[in-house]
Length: 155
Image (cartoon, rainbow, N blue to C red; front, side):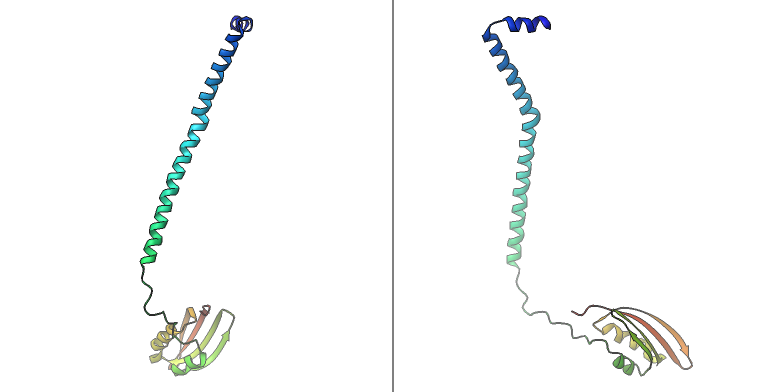
């Protein structure tokens, strides 16, 4: 190897120029194959994906444009707001305790057992009652209903 390097240095200028050009070409070819070409391939794939996504977006916009608007606007719910006095009065009950809080409340009342199913149906109709848990105990001929209610935000 040492002999080749000495021969290269002692050789003609044209030999050194040709060898530097050949080595440079080989380095450029290797750089192209290993570094640059994969990047162009990745860029082409990304451009194809972008074109496909753009076409899909155009199709969706076209489909949205074909949709017909609602002929009648949606009406807000006519469900009543929760009223303790109304709830107890319709159940023919007696209010024992009403403890409201910001997002919840506890209601204790006595009511006839016949009115219990109807009371739960009415409770489900109220607009602001999101959820509830309850306890039912017997109090003579009446039932003691303890409701723990959570209130939803008003629309």
